[in-house]
View 1 (cartoon, helix red, strand yellow):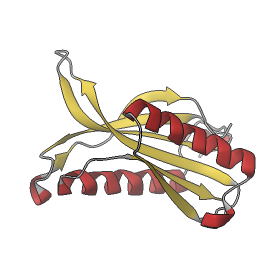
View 2 (cartoon, helix red, strand yellow; view 1 turned 45 degrees about the horizontal axis):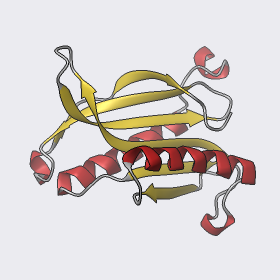
View 3 (cartoon, rainbow, N blue to C red; view 1 turned 180 degrees about the vertical axis):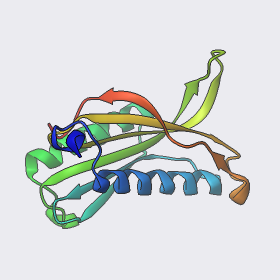
View 4 (tube, rainbow, N blue to C red; view 1 turned 90 degrees about the horizontal axis):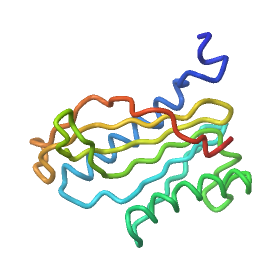
Length: 151
């Protein structure tokens, strides 16, 4: 509990939001579809709004998702999505992670944060895109701290 109070831990609400988003990303890949940059933002009342970024390069989509979090914070939410002032977010996207030999493996990358706390990134290696029940993933592994988009 001490880590949560000093802004270093991951709250149960953020864990749930990021785990749900990661599960959605796995479902998309298991079906064989392209994984767009997906963003989920939650307010203090537990309302969640989701956004997808797909019409630009992967880097531009990721930048757009990050900017959307900042814009939602500045606007204190998104009335059209019934989202109040955002308190936590998670974004997931497809990428690759180098293994110990320097070879790249497909992965789902996740960034997640909560107002007033340290934000983190994580990844899960994936295999078997489009194979439905044959799709496999690893447990998420930490990838370090990232900028907190909510401040």
